[in-house]
Amino acid sequence: MKISQPDRELLPNETPTLEGLTDSGFKKILVALDRQSEKTIFAKALKLASQGESNLMIFHGISEQLLKTPDMVNTANPWAFDGFYPPDNFEYFEKVRQAALNEVLSWLRSLCETATNLGIPTEFDYKMGDPGHVICNCAKNWGADLIIVGRRGRSGLSEILLGSVSNYVLHHATCAVLVVQ
Image (cartoon, rainbow, N blue to C red; front, top):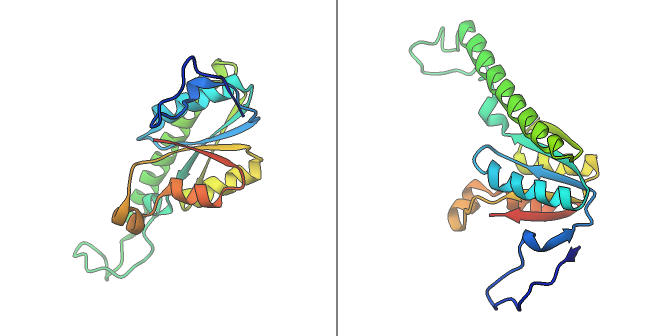
C-alpha cells in the first residue's frame, strides 16, 4: 500500500488517514455496511476504490434473529391458539420479513448505483446469518483483497456479552481488514 508523504511530520498521537492514500493496491474491496454507520464507511470505501481502480462489493449481513419467523413454539400468550401461534401470525411475520428484505435490497441497489455512477465497478450482496461470519465468507468466496467494516465502539463487558462484528472479522478474515470508527 502506498501512502503519500505528509507535508509535515506526524505528531506522536497522530495516525495517517485515508486522505493520504494514492493507490491502495487493493483490486477487490468488500465494504460491510449496516444502516447505522453507512455514510462514513461507504464514503471511505468509495474513496479507496476510486483511487485504486478497484472493484467494490457492497455487503450487508442480516442477523437471522432479526428476520426469523417464529417456529411453532409453545407460548403462554393468551392470544395463541392451543398454546401455539395461529396461522394468521405466520402470514403476518412472513409479510414483515419480506418487507424488510425488500427494503434492504432497495437500499443496497441505491448504494450500488451511487458507486457505479462514480465509475467504480460495483456489485452488492446480502446474506442471513451471524454478520461477522457471513462477511468473512462473502469476502473469501468473492476473493476480496480488503474488507472495510465499521466499529460501534463497544468495549469491556458489552463487547464480551454482545460480541463485536469488527472484532470477529479482524480475527477470521482471510484478507486485509480496515476498521472505520
